[in-house]
Image (cartoon, rainbow, N blue to C red; front, side):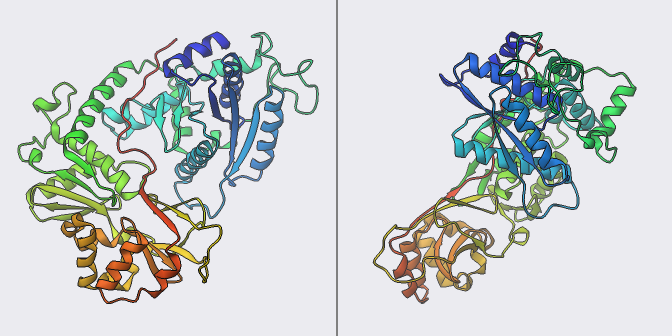
Amino acid sequence: MDAASFSALMAPFAPFEEKPRLMVAVSGGADSMALAILAARWCADHAGKLVAVTVDHGLRADAAGEAQWVKRQLAKYGITHMTLRWTGPKPGAAIQQEARAARYRLIDDLAGELGILHVLVAHHCNDQAETVAMRQDRKSGPIGLAGMSAQRYLRHCRVLRPLLPVARKDLSATLMALEKAGIVPCGTGRSETADSDPHSGGQNWIEDPSNSNLAFERVRMRQRLQLCAVGAGDFSSQAFARQNLEQAIAGFLARYVFVAADGAASVQWPFMADCDIKADGDAAGANVGVGEFDIAAYGIGHVLRIIGGGQYAPARDSVRHVLRLLQKNTAARHSLAGCVLHRRENHILIYREAGRMDVSPQPVLSHGLTRWDNRFELCLKLPEKTATRGDMTGFSIVPLAVCDPFHKRVFRRAMARTVPFWASRPRQALAVLPLLLWQDQPLSVAGLEICALSDVLSAAGCPTDHLELFRVIKVTWRFAPSAPLWEGGFKFVANP
């Protein structure tokens, strides 16, 4: 690959800002090293700037040294490099999935901090073939069988996969032939130090030992495809099927779903009454080969994802099963994906499941944003100088159910008078609201500022003296799931 072919791959993601700033995730493997070097040339041609990021997951002893190696190699091309570290305890199961989620979370947070809107990752055509094959084994529907989208959205940025049409072997060849392509390291030529390339020309890369570990499903699938001599293939038909289905799901969400500021969602019920639960022959889904019931299952799956604070929607069949149960019972409640689906006459109310939440107090940052339960953000701003006395530390967040006054009916009635639509919320839906504490004393609930909570506590006969210390604090709550309810727009990049 050369600069011109990479520019053609970037074109479908336009428009960019006048001087685009990009971030690229670099593990040190051939794929990401090639992407970083090609992207740096693209940025230079557009008067932009590139930042490369390596995530040290803390899972291998060599990881920190490899990140430093990547930094030295990219410095030869004038590429700024940063290392992010995944700290804290590591899961004992699903380690690749959890590491991937942590990687995207760290990169997204850094992109937000730096004000970078576009993050490039190096998934290529072989990765796509493996993904589709694994999903075929799981009997995925049209959404899964289309594979990875060339574009997806995180909280602060969009993730771009410009190399999806490119084969793995072409990326390795690109590194080995960089000088022939006119892309050379800064300075007088290739370094002859210990970092010089043992791959017989061009730029070196790292071979990740996990890529040959048969404990991972992707590695087993890779070997299976190689043994069967299966090529990358053309995924355009699956892509078009997904795009059509996504259009139908977007219509469902726009017409039937309302997400409230308190992190609960309502789904209008009447559309379900005449749905074909076998998902065949329904007029609304005829253009995509999927019935209205399945379209609803896909859409509600994404509602469950944001209300439950999850990374991914639950399996479509699991959602279908719960919807069938709700269809049979006008007052049913069922749990799925960390949420409660509560049928209430003409709609389904979906809210966080209290039993799935961590009730231990989460410390709060005195300045800046604190994320809680992967659903809410709290911005707590303390005055630089204050005449009040008292300890302005010791803030934490817990579910409202932890607060003793919440269990008094008079307290909940006073809440409903302050926020009228709470009068129709079941007690369990209010119990999962975030509560700001100061040394075990309630200060603010999402939707209730400190002064408003003071009125509620007074109406319930609870002490409010402690609140006087905090009148000068600015508290801002926001329901902010890790990804939007619906990004849709599956992006398929055709062969250049």
